[in-house]
Image 1 (cartoon, rainbow over the protein chains, first blue to last red):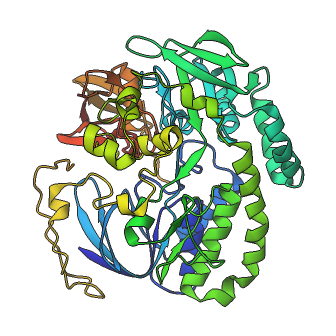
Image 2: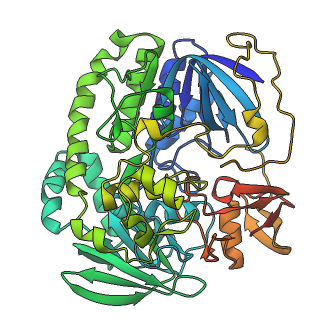
Length: 442
Length: 83
C-alpha cells in the first residue's frame, strides 16, 4: 500500500512532533512515521508522568491532521521522493514532496571488560527499560559515563525506588564550570538540575571517574570504579553506562545529505544539501529538547509555507546553539578511556569481535572485511561510534558506508519493485507484501 | 479513556508471566531472569540500548524471529521464546 504526503516527517520525538504539528497547520497533508510503539521519542517515552511541555505537544499532535504511522521503521530510500517502511508484518512505500528527518540520537557506548554481561546497559537504556515496566525498586544501580543524561537517569530511577550506589561522570569537575555558568542563564534548566539533585540526595557523585570492569556470571554482580588512579569495587544489580549521544545519521546519509563533522549539514532554515529535505533535532546538533522543538518548528514551517514564516525563530535557534557548544566541551571524552578495553574485550557485540582482533586493522572497512566487525544486525550502530573513538576510524558515520536496507528487513519487504508507478497520488495501489517467513537479511 | 484491564498474561519460554499493561516484551523477559539471547560465541546477553538500535534484545514473538523486544509491548496470550 502506498501513501502520498506533501510533507513526510521521520521520527516522533520532540523535533519530529513539532515539525509535523507546525507543518500541518498550513493544511498540507503531513505524515509522521516512527518506529516506537508510541510518539514522544526517547525523552518523552511513555511510562513516566509527562511534563507540561510533553503533554502540550502530544495533545497538539492528537488534535492535528497529521497522519501517524507508529511502529513503522524506515528501511530504504528506493528513489527520490519515496521511503520504504516496514512494520512487524507489513511493508509500504511512502511518497513525499518534502521530507523532514528527525531521527534523533543514540548513546555512545565504550567497551570495557564485562560490558556484555546482562544487566549492564546504557544510561538511557536502563531508563527506557524501567519506563517499559522493568521493576527497579530496591535494586542497586551504578550510573556512569558522561553528560547530563546521567543525572536525569539517576533522578528518575531514584524516584522509582532504586538505590543509586554511585554516579560517575568521566569529565573532571573543572569542565563543568563553564557548563554551570551557562545554566545560570537558563532558569528552566537550572530548576531541572536542582530537581535532579533533590531526587538523588544522599547519592555519591564522582567526577573524573568511570567504570573499568563489570563482573558477574549469568548477570551483573559488581562494578569496579576508577578515580585518580584508585580502584574500588561496588556490588550492584545494574550498571547504567553511556558516554553522551551520537546522532542517528543513517537515513540522512542514505538520502544523500551532506554530513559535516559528524552531523547533518543544514542552513539556518534546516534545509540540507538535498533540495526539499530538511533535518531537525539531534542529527544537526546535540542540544536538548528545547533546541529540538525549535528546530522542529523551523523545519516544519520552512517546508510547509516557506522560509519567511520561520525567519523570526532563527535568532532563537542561534542563541540555543550556545548550549550545544557548552555541552560538547563539557562531555569531551578523556583519552584514558581508550585504555579500558583489553585484548579480549568484545567491541562488536553482534559478531563478538574483540579489541585485540580489531587493533591490527587500519580502517573501519578493513576491519569489516577481515573480522565481520559491524556486519551483524545492528550494522555498526554500536561498535561504529566506539571504534571512532578507539581507533579514529570513520566508521558508520560516513555516507559511503551506508547501504540499504538501513535496518535488517524481511525478504518480502525488499521485493517491492523500485519502478512502482503508484507515486504520486495513486493511493489505492496495493504493493506486493505477500507474507513469507520473516527472515533477517545480512 | 475507556477502562482497560491493568494486567495481562503472556508466556515467556512456556512460563506464564503477569505484567502491567504497557510493559515491553524485553522487560517481561528480564522479569523471568532469563538471558534474552546467546551470542555467536555463547555468551548470555541482555538489552543494552533500550531503543531498538543494538539488537541485543531480539527474540521470537508469536513465531516471528528476530523481533526487537524493547520496541514491542506485551499483549494478552503472547508467546515469547528467547534463544
